[in-house]
Length: 514
Ligand code: GAP
Image 1 (cartoon, rainbow, N blue to C red):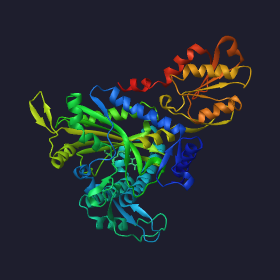
Image 2: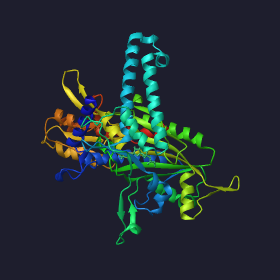
Image 3: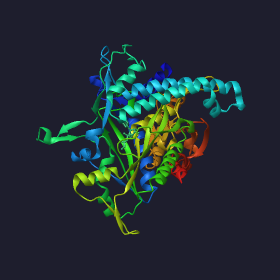
Image 4: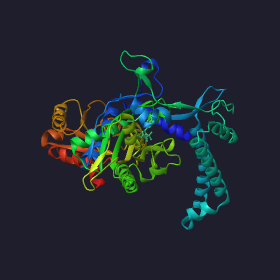
């Protein structure tokens, strides 16, 4: 655990040192679970958004975008189930006065057993070498099967208690498992209570219950309530999708782990409206499409896994998470949910308006089913940042810190560096920037040795450094250095646009998705 904490701390301090992420309102000692994106963070975030948006809206003729408001009519949240069911079970430790999510305490207990199983598997794999059959080992080794049975029993009891809203049994389970508060080390727990995660505020001058309005806890409902507006004005036929990127707010009980769990965050959600009965097929389609989107970035195939839900959200008939190997271990990055016709039917009922699709092929009117993909932008940012940050020892024994950010997502694409501050080299470098800046985010720097400047660019993930020297003035050539291989090549200034473009253009990622 300590090692994982260290890894996350390293990412946090690097992000702050280089202007990716700052604690919110830091001069007032910060605000818990709120963060600001700095000069490089804002660029990286925008690039992630663009990759997602283009992969949805530009690459699919039948997906269009939307930008709906954060405030919505309060009945939206009654209809969606958020007022009644968007709760987390919370429990306090009476000695430390620390608050926890009961489900997280149980999940962490299970995760510890999983680690023990993994250790046994790894040991056996080492012992048996090529002859090792993991599946057979997991199903026959007595230690592993005993631990797996324990996990199955814990999760079955917990799901049953939560589904039945039996919070007494959730508390009893925490006590039976001997779970202690990590701060006080005691089992002195309060009862488990449900806590609604929506932030409330008041509309205009109206106070009291009639003026209550919520900050949206997901962007999805803005899509549902606009389903007919978009369908009619776009004249799209089923199946079609609506994509949206925007802020969401949740009063998380335990908000921690940097930008992984915040109270204000951004989602990138796409609702795909389909004919009832086709949901299984589209569920598989979007699972494949979304994992391909992630894999195209090259952050490491083994860093992703699917985790199917045991307990469905109130709206879903099938759901899975794409988990990413964050510094804290595998955790949810994206959700793919088969939401049936739950949302549109609920909005029909609460608004009294029909939200139906007239199918010209069958001459029928029906409420479409919905397949949703929902990814947290901030979590995606953390996935990119944490997997890109690497400490390397070079052949000559020197060290470098490099961020191997996928080139199309890199905040700065090329730095232009005059070798010295004199002899007209800065002017030439500026000339090059003035050519490149229309296509790429560029950066000019003349301070320090060239080696130090290269290292600074490595540390923020800049794919190319272009050095202008005295030869440049004679023959219009420069040295271009590539971040990952550190190879340097002498090229004509005229070739720079093409060389950089081949690597950093978003289309290099999008073409992998076909
Ligand atoms: N519309 C469905 C929905 O909102 P969700 O699983 O609750 O589903 C979707 O959220 C994604 O939003 C998650 O996979 C996660 O990436 C992100 N997310 C949720 N809560 C978050 C939080 N407190 N901080 C940062 N990201 C969060």
